[in-house]
Image (cartoon, rainbow, N blue to C red; front, side):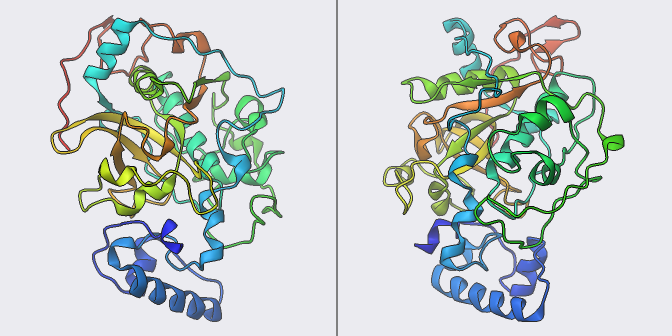
Length: 362
């Protein structure tokens, strides 16, 4: 069903031209625009204003490449060179404290503005989104948008999961120096052909390589608690999700617990079909415990590119793949309970001081 991708979004004026402006959509030819407009009008009539999103001009068979391909998720089989620093559990006391505090890393300047993916490279966008935050939190560099298009064009594995050559060896240009290709070029479900590589090694930014990866394991009874504690300590991470759960978000951009119950697989039987960033969590008086999810569908989608989803009930199978992140610097510090990023709110000058309990303002 096409509603898989026609998720709720707040749009101020339902006209095709305004929708194009909201989501920065353009076409190479007038004939393509006329065809896309007819598709857009059909989907608007069928699903309504609340379901508009950056891909409302797509036909049903075109939808899967937006969500990604099977080899783009975060916990598929990996190459031998794909290092993975071993997970280590935090102490019960640390876990309890982290879960009570909650955090929104947007409030601490550690999250870049949501980017807009044009093809099925959701895993690439989410990995880079988390890496941007990690470099900022564990260094003295400003928050910087890293180029996703550079990875898609130039990495030997392009938009697939094993992009270690870029992350570990080459490093990144900025998104401004190597901008995203927003055209609707055909990528054959992630197999190419890809745009030509235009890498300029002179523009690789300082200290933009990473040391390793680490992963909060999925499919555990307490996986979501482990993910939340890791997120509180170390910053934003990558996670896999069944994007169908976004479909019925309300005007406040929350997905209710009830709406999670009947969404277990997509139309192709996949329990996971999208990659996102987790950038925070908290507790809302109306909706209970929730995740703050950063998507890669542009800042006009939902709440400036973010959506809020129930936490602790395995909504959208978010527990299935756990959480992964590229580590910046020595990976041992990611499991050292007294080794917080120097930009962590729990720091007070040079001494660690835990903050007061955070009440969500959402």
